[in-house]
Length: 287
Image (tube, rainbow, N blue to C red; front, side):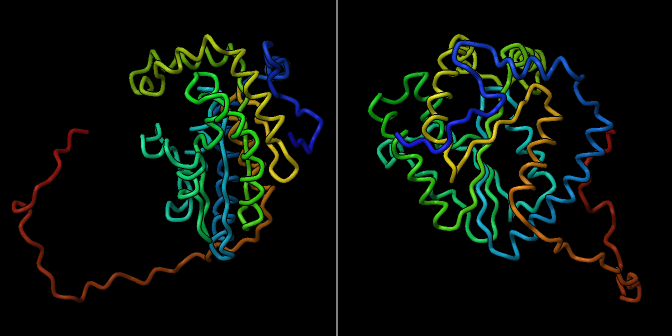
């Protein structure tokens, strides 16, 4: 086992215990309000666009991995980042359950095909770290496959970094109390109910097992070349802002956004007769 860094980061969970760092942080200040959040997010969105143009111009290859417990807020920050960017440059990868064919392949194979080309940012909503988390805890892989992953993953990531990929890994840390609140919210809201599955329900009884799996995963894969960055995520809004701000700090960039375009006046001199409105199908105006 190779471990390049000894010190644990604040906010990491301890096996069998609550994330005490979270509880302390939550007691010190209230959750951020929507007005302040939107104001600060607007500034960060402008910087994200600058980063996007820099990535495009310099043909950078950027991979950002988001991991964490169920309902920790990974999907929210991913949608927030991608929401203001060009989908041709920034894309989201959220792979489903592997097919029988994929199960017979080299474990990392289906993820390799999703890696960025020059000028792309790829946001992984869960990644190859499924093997160190849900697959291990829920028994979807053998002990041999799990141990091989822990040995191979650091080498795999070093190889990607040597190839020129900028790789950033975030772990969203959430307390058991806040996770329960979010699960209940999803159950009550019909538009969010799809976010909670039977697997999530079963995972609630394995909180300690997931903590132990996360600790072991960090011990192997939290390296100097590819460190994990822990995001305290009990406050969704602060977690998003902190994560985006930190992401921007890791990739040096310059402002290459284009200057405002001056639109010419519309040309009404062209002879044109509009077809009768009755010949077109219109959407009913119910609202």
